[in-house]
Image 1 (cartoon, each protein chain N blue to C red):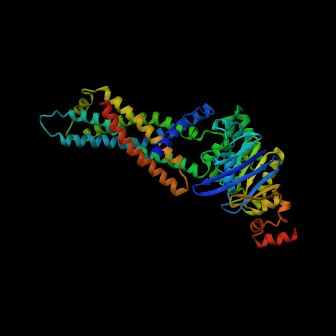
Image 2: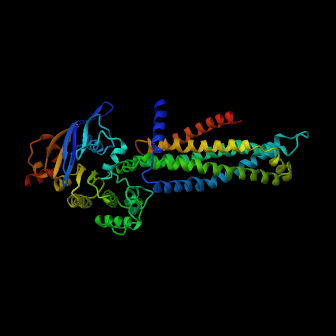
Length: 243
Length: 250
């Protein structure tokens, strides 16, 4: 455990050494941003709309009382979507989509000697392979979470429009009632950390792959599992500290 | 010239290299041969710095490579070209991008100059016009040749080749051997080839080091190899009936 932690920290240190040529690394960052950001947009959009709709329906189902204003459904949906559903569920899905891709890509490069080829050329392989992915992760995942929040709230709107339990007007009123910017700040901090966790842990697992195709698969699985565990742990810690 | 002094390397309890001393001179095809598990690839990886030997030194033209940090090694690494057993081409890049990759990182050449250099390297390995193909679209022999083109793109002083003939048909193997020999002569590179292909040994082995059980067991040229009395070397080189028959005619 301590050995892995030390190796992980050393790898991160190597990843952020001065690049050989900034323009080449910048191109890689852009490529990774497209891969992580645009490439994940579809799946994030689908889960966000459904989660927003389901959250609205279930909240409305549990708050059947004449003493509770219907608008509260919108408020609860808003807060739970911004604080928990959008950042955490999106991150868990992205750990599967982005994380496994990173671990298997770097792992395959390791077992096919492509990383050795980089090192022979004098390229700082962790810097070239890992830092663009981390930079892309910590910038694109918060953006994806913002989109996810918007689509989640839209999902709730659609659910209200499709059912008669809460009217659209009540839902919109609930969304705007008593909004505190801190929940958005917490959400963005979470997204930033989750982006770092997914990219760095999966890159670490891929980078230290040894063996063949079987081990590449195992590294991808380990990367996703550890990312998910650390996402949930970070979720708890950030919530406890910031709220 | 590359010099290895008393190289020892172990993996757990397995003592793979047991004090290898060798001098690898420029303008020659230096072949490291030996049976499976004899330590050839480990020695090559120690020389290029992919493995750190427990004991011993690797000297590149008077500079102690083993003692250097990663950053200190970069000037020497820029002068190294290497062809890997699996070719190790970057899957996500086209043939041209693979070749100009080191040029992008370490030179200030313009885009036009880099493309011209890539074209020159591809012509040199008889693959002119294949710039836009991706590694997945290439045959094994073509991958090796692109690997050589990438290795020579920076005009290396040292060329390392790991099992250049593995997985290739005899005709392509000979073409690859000839290409390596031509490049060595043309650029006067210090070429180090790890192989167990007897055609390579007899064809281009200017200087041969035979490893056995992690030790340097024999050293000489391809002309001397046919007349040696070293039992282990003879068992290795003349294992097949074809080679035994060929030996009688030598």
